Amino acid sequence: MAVRVGGGSVKPAVLVVGESRVAANVGGREIDPAGDQHGYTNSIVKPDTFLRAAIGLLMIAFVYVIYNSFTERVVSVGDRAPEFSVTADNGKQLSLKDFGGNLLVLNFWATWCPPCIEEMPSLDRFQRRMASDGVVVLGISVDKNEKQYRDFLARARVSFLTARDPESRINSEYGTFKYPETYVISRSGRVLRKFIGEKAWDEEAMLSDIRSLL
Image (tube, rainbow, N blue to C red; front, side, top):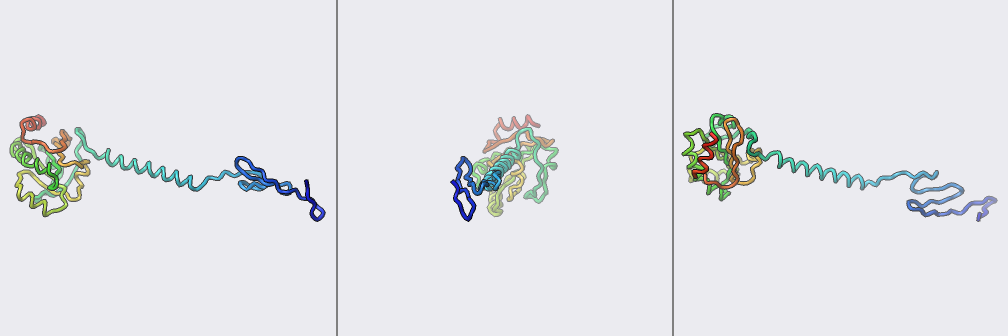
């Protein structure tokens, strides 16, 4: 039914409710609030859709980086030992290549680690017994407190080489996070043995095992 206004007729607005839009027919033209006045519907992507996608991608990237940081840095038996450089307590600058003619026993420890302290006397006896066979022990401490470190060594009076790496640069390269942790490295720089936790270094079984690597 048309309504006559001023000599003309205007069709009343009719709201059409569909599944995805509400349209109005005014004066013979369909007005679609979701599109344009010609009836075309634009595809609109909500901003929060992009935000959720971006957050998801960032989370995937974060997990990947964390996973790689642990899996790629853990050194295992058969791997090439990472290079390092450290100033020993005797003042000498040491690197992995300096031990090329010897079997290197690289021990990571700390004064605040009870198993490390328990292990140290047997490691010292091991060094004394194996020195003539070309075995060298290097104990690298991750202590940040230098005084505590030096006071302990003054009491322990160990015979093997010692050094302090307060920034944990070297043990990070080896993927070491459990102390004590020890690597037996061949003359060619290959990891032959890896020990996690306290060991009885001067027991015959251990001595025989290390001798078999010479």
